[in-house]
Image 1 (cartoon, rainbow, N blue to C red):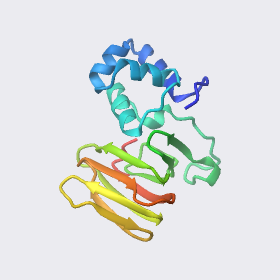
Image 2 (cartoon, helix red, strand yellow):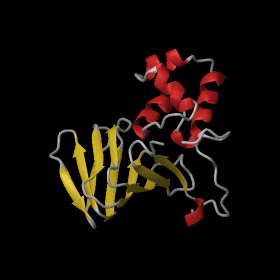
Image 3 (cartoon, rainbow, N blue to C red):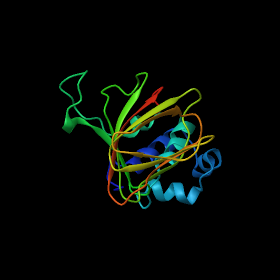
Image 4 (cartoon, rainbow, N blue to C red):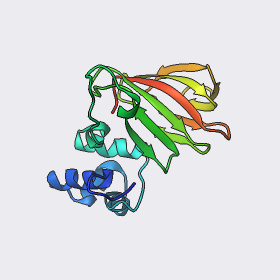
Length: 186
């Protein structure tokens, strides 16, 4: 992540300092080290989406509150060039938000998993549900309390997202999925 004026790190630092928190306080509340949080804030380290969720939960905001707004011509339609997205180099995943309103009951996303892509440590809000449809490639889904399953192009899965789960690219080629989480977790 670049450390430009609108970078995620700068926005996290502004949120922290604006609320009067020290790095040590945020570290204690999130289980992340203060030195790691400092590296993220200065753009010298990437943060996984799962860890970012812990930080935004502490602040009581959503990940989408930290992303650039993309001007849209329509409040109902999201055009190809209007996707808001979050790329995690650390996880090898690129998530594109497909809904114009991120405060709705569900959050549809298009996710691309690089060959080493791995969405780990994820657990949704209590009562949340998730659906994923594999557009291409092979995806491994590991949901607590279930056997690990491999999904291939055309396969889908539906589960209670409040159970810890991990999603990873199970092959050597890029994987693309359409997923929906409800209630919207971002």
